[in-house]
Length: 133
Length: 133
Image (cartoon, chains in turn blue, orange):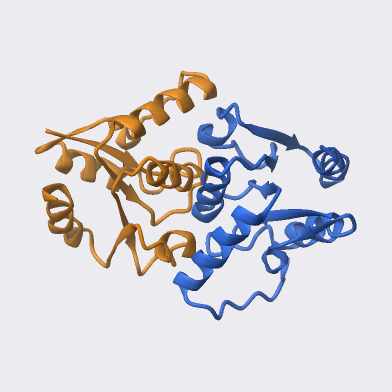
C-alpha cells in the first residue's frame, strides 16, 4: 500500500479538522496515512517542537505522495509542501475555491497538482485519481 | 548592501501589512529589500500566479538573507522558508508570542533562527543583529 503524508493546519487553526478526518478515513481504505493525528478532532500535542519537526520531516522523506488540504492558511503546510517538493515527492493540493484564494507560491508552481473544489463530494474521485498514479 | 527577501502573508490575510511596511522601511535603511511590495498597504496583484512564483523563487535564490514575519499563518511564507532553507539561505523568523503559537515545522527546525517578541519595538534591535551577521 502507498505511504501518504497528509498535511493540514494544526497550530494555524483547526477549522478544517473535521474535513481532514474525513479525507484521512477515505485514504486509509486503500493506502497508509503516516500523519493520521492531523485528523484527530481532540489532538493533544505532547512531543517537543524539535521532535515533531524531526518526525514529520522523516515521514515526508518516507512518503510516496503528499496530499494537502489548503483551504486554511498554515505555515506548517506551506513548509511541508516545499520540503516534499525538494525531495521529489508528488504533491496534490486540495482547496475550497469558494472559501480561499490559494497562495501563488502553490498555485503558480508547475510541480504541484492543484485540485480546487466547491463541495466536499468532489474531493473523493480526485483522491482516487491521485492515489492511482 | 545585503539583498534581503522579506516574507509576509499576502492571500492568507493582510492583518500584518502595516507591520510588514514598518519592518521593510527599517531594513531598507541598510539593505536592499527584494520584496518591497509585501509591505504595500494597497497591494494590487497583476501578474499571473506562474509569473509570481517564478519571480519570488528567483528572488529567494538571489537573496543573502530571509526575514519572515510569521505571526499570521500563511501557506506562501511557509513555502518560501523551506525553499530558502533548501537553497542554503539563513532564515530569521519573527512572531508575536502573545498572538500566535508558531508552527513546530518552523520552531522545531534547528536551521532557522526564531525571534519571538512581545512588542514591535523589540523587533528592530533583533533585525540589526540579523543584518550584521
